[in-house]
Image 1 (tube, rainbow, N blue to C red):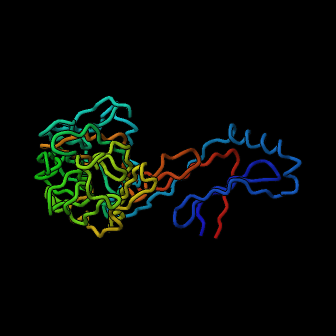
Image 2: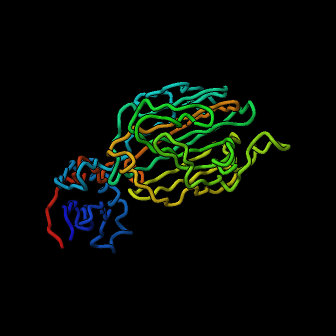
Image 3: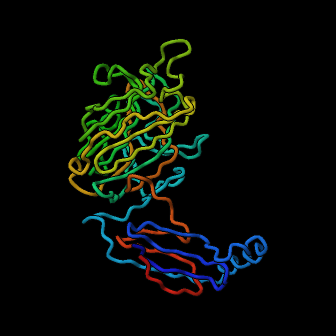
Length: 348
């Protein structure tokens, strides 16, 4: 079953078709030639015709209202993007978090390369999550200028019910002891013994301000990244403290969490958490959350910089709509088409 409109141009040898199907996916057959034999000889006329369509066709807005996915669910969309942090509008910075000017531009420095620090940055207002509290996020980080006993301690990506959540520094990574319900994905760069799997380079899951380190995974299988060795092991490929620009992609589909990292020195991405079962809706107890980062340093330190960040309330990030695409707004389907003359057809 097809739903929508057929837009036709005033040219006898082609037409434009634009419609939405029963699954409410956008379908656009750019040009259907009704007399293909004339294509080669009328290419210039085609180009002129398309130019006229672009400039002369008026906007037609087709609203298919009442499309509801689930009670309380917002429209799936990219909620915010920070290409850098020259502006922190929309963020609340607490503790030792600040911005800093670096070779990457203006970054979010969750904690600086100084001992005994604890910092966090969260969305100032709670953001709506998707169906089953689904979300996806992507960000890049760079850890630099390590010092003290070893590079330490890393960052935690946090989704929680408190925007002022700030835990202890050091091994707490700014997350231990935060108030409210939350989940934290830690990127830990210091070996705290058995609880860390005796690793200084691991990714794991924490909940409600506790450091459970569940589903622990060593990034790229590398477990030792410290000042030992010659050269020091932390400089090696696959070590999160090596100073490279790392990329993180994270998605949650309402039942399972996947987290992958990429170190340019490795040349491939590493899946640290692969479809790990998780009930985020049960943990949070609500369909909105404050999202952001925490970090900490202790007797060891490094700059913990977030270079850029984007967040979406769907398991797959939704691109910014372009003209002639489908936009989901408030539970309705809006199809935007450029038309000058149209005729409506019912199809099946």
